[in-house]
Length: 350
Ligand code: SAH
Ligand code: SF4
Image (cartoon, rainbow, N blue to C red; front, side):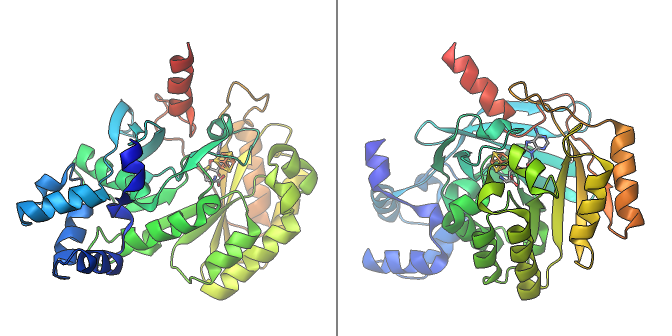
């Protein structure tokens, strides 16, 4: 494993970087295209790259690390086909991803970190803090190996698994380029959503990239008092600062922003909060997703009733804000993000 740490992860390289590396190895640059194609398939060893000579495969093996996640747990919903995977990475750390089957295609929800350090009070992913960032190649692996497992192409990607994507900014940006570039699996950026708890400075940085992805903000409360009590990030970037970054993002990219709003009983679901949310978003191209809270046992927060969610939605719509209530997928398997990894970690401790 220590030897692995010294090697460059080959899947993290862009085609240009691969060309340079091959030139340094005394190889023809055109090999880069062949290798790049292989790297965007779920190969498990350099020996599977059969159009390369054996000596070249051996040289690649010596110099690079080819990451291969191992599926150590899988749950398949009997209700709607949702699949949840727990992967073991090359250093033994685990992350989870989910495949959701929607009418508009197969959607994969990827993790971007092992754990998370944002500490949101309702989230199972943050319970153990941050262990490490995932590399761009490891995030790509989640997609590649799900495609392999389900035998179908993936059409959409959401960065909504464990981790705060913008806390792992460089690797996530690299992943977005790798997964959408020519020569790879080419998932169009309009088919990718990135969800963030609201790191305003990073949102502004991302705006400069002018990507076509959908930015999704986990707002969850329109007022700092409620928001900061469930999301510590609000103390660093209060709602007004966050909205300023969102304005900048829209002005720079022209992309409408999506707002995630979790319905927690007596905490975020009061009528005045719906009015406040509507006032906050008025005049901005926005879409609100109302998500019923998924209870986690460490938190006293409970989901709102269906009637309360419906009333909240009506107040928003009366104020001209479009809002949908998110359908819960995979009701018969561990639903909330981070729960499969959490359960496995707990079992390991026993
Ligand atoms: N860290 C990023 C992306 C991963 S979390 C973020 O926070 O946006 C993906 C989404 O799941 C976020 O909107 C998050 O707030 C939400 N979420 C986390 N735990 C939840 C729970 N117990 N119930 C409902 N939504 C939850
Ligand atoms: Fe991290 Fe997102 Fe969970 Fe908050 S909701 S702890 S930011 S993964």
